[in-house]
Image (cartoon, rainbow, N blue to C red; front, side, top):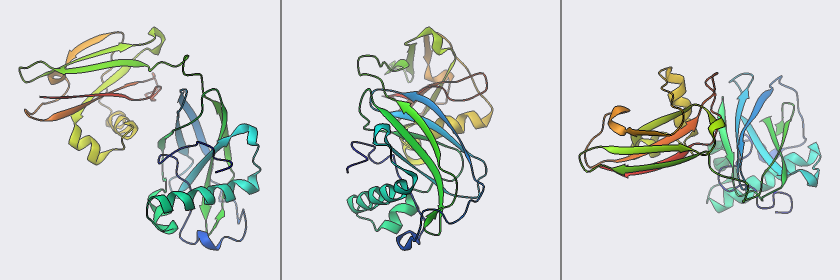
Length: 258
């Protein structure tokens, strides 16, 4: 694709409602919806954002392009639809089926993947109803770093102790990361209930209100965090958390089997 370049496989999804194919214009009305978009982390080939809409009554969509392409607003719709059509075909779905699966209501964490290092991008977030964009387009600029500059926020290891437990070691890559959380859950439950990047699980944990924080290098047994069952595989998720209970790093995972 000329404008999407290497942008986003699978995770970036975009747009529309069932009547998208009959679009006859870019904007049909302004529904008053707006978005707060927060960059959590930008690596050399990915970027993670939190998107918080002003209300949960409308589905919304997002699209990203290299900033130097300088795509005008009336082209964002066209490029979004071009991407959606190709992604639907690749998934063996009709355009309508694909778009329904990719709607994004409410607060979400998204990760844009397969980005190019040291490149500027623009993330666009907007509502789309009746085959046209129905809100202002929120635009957020960001840049990826070089591969040499990037390091994951945590080194996480998890190994069975041989006596029905798992030893977890978390070593932050930078002391300025501050506090973080450690989650332990059965891998089967994690894969069934949450998206693979771990952000939905992290948000679910934070929303529970029962938050345990760690700081600095931590060595801890999984049994002190969660009840364990023998012969089960577990996912360990680690993410930075702010004093306002906001996720502030990517979610780093490890796994171990009892």
